Amino acid sequence: MSDEYILETHELTKEFAGFVAVRDVNLRVRRGSIHALIGPNGAGKTTCFNLLTKFLQPTAGRIVYRGQDITALAPADVARLGLARSFQISAVFPHLTALENVRVALQRQHGDCFDFWRSKSVLYRFNERARELLSDVGLSDFTTVKAVEMPYGRKRALEIATTMALEPDMMLLDEPMAGMGQEDIGKIVALIKRISAKHTILMVEHNLNVVADLSDTITVLTRGRVLAEGSYAELSKDERVKEAYLGAGHA
Image (cartoon, rainbow, N blue to C red; front, side, top):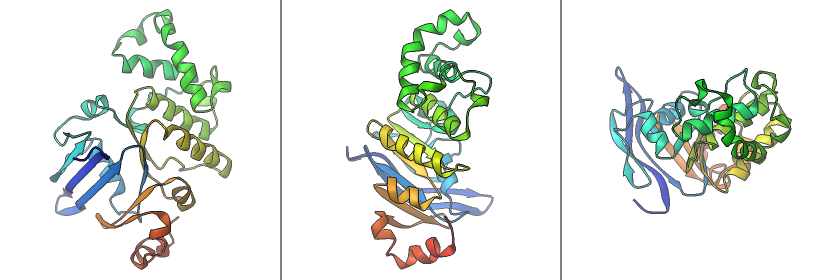
């Protein structure tokens, strides 16, 4: 595996009772890039994410992360290697404040499994780093606000902060703009641009304006296969992509 790529899949395939959801997918994600996975509904994007984070085992093929074959590893082992999926790994508790949520995530990263049940004073040593992470995602003014009371877009930013607390080299974001208004979309786009300076990003996203704005490389899936790959400018001219995705009315 080239040092240029942090993640590669080789002929990755997943079959469910005779239905092939993902077939022979070869994916290569460059270190330090923002790579988008797009396609119509049912194209296999979420199945790919579940395979990469090991919540599903492939029927065939291999997954290589930072030069190590992780195909047979458990989800927790993959997360410890620095491959984190935001909504599955995040530690957002609705009735804890933003600071408390990030502090718990930091506690988990440092292996202090039982600190949550001890005196709060045990967690205070994580306060400075938690505040830094909240600042990184634009939540400095929400430190003492409970997650349940935060606007939807700010909750998504908090989820990203808790994922960043795990210190991943690579973050997988599954539809980070889902359910957001235009103002929140702008904030999360800016946030992803900022965190991509330190983290490789692989994301599934339906909003093509976001994909065009953020992505260095885009892989188009259809019917479980890779249809095309390239920049947004390149793919927007590809007739196969227009027919299978862009022309199908998906946004």
